[in-house]
Image (tube, rainbow, N blue to C red; front, side, top):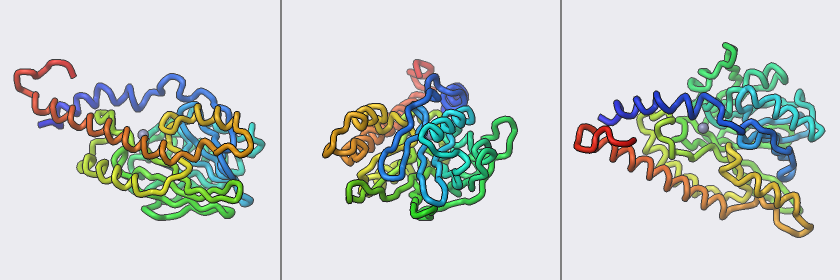
Length: 286
Ligand SMILES: [Zn+2]
């Protein structure tokens, strides 16, 4: 059976890929306004977002606990107070996005909002033994609202069971833009994912669902998923009348296509490994 081979691989690769911090991911990135009341306050690779409202601010993704000081500095560089964060919203139950929740809670007292289906997994991240704070559980289509900003949750399972994307509307120059902060469609490293029963079917349904959103402003949990650095450069050089580079419906579609392909390739590879097990090719390569 495949699961046996697979858990051996998981043991070998999971700590490397998911529990240690890949080099450079926590490096600072210049904080900036993306559009309207939405600001980028994440690191070079771990995307965190700040929605600024007259009633306090919403932070999405605390990242690693060691990312929190980097995020805090970014928030302050923009002229906002970290302690004005009233709500902390999670994307999905991986340590590079939610490990810092307890520290953010400690520093701000923010309400911590987590997807119901990811809650158990999220509670496992307890840096320094701290209990993981969860104040509100959300399901598909639940909303988080503060000071005129409303975020809507969309369940995109696969990468984790309860992976949540969040949508909202931003305005610029009199136009409204459907804004989508994607969860993660990354399934190319099957060996480091939970591999819960039904994961493959979930992923396939999620890729279909991903194509149903009328995405204009495209953002995600990792900077590399939406080419943050390149778009940031363009934004810096933007002349009056130039489009906002974060409005990227085509880039979003291309991203979905690319990650669907790499996921299917990983599934095919895993199936081939399973088929070989015990056969003439057993033990060769990965
Ligand atoms: Zn993840």
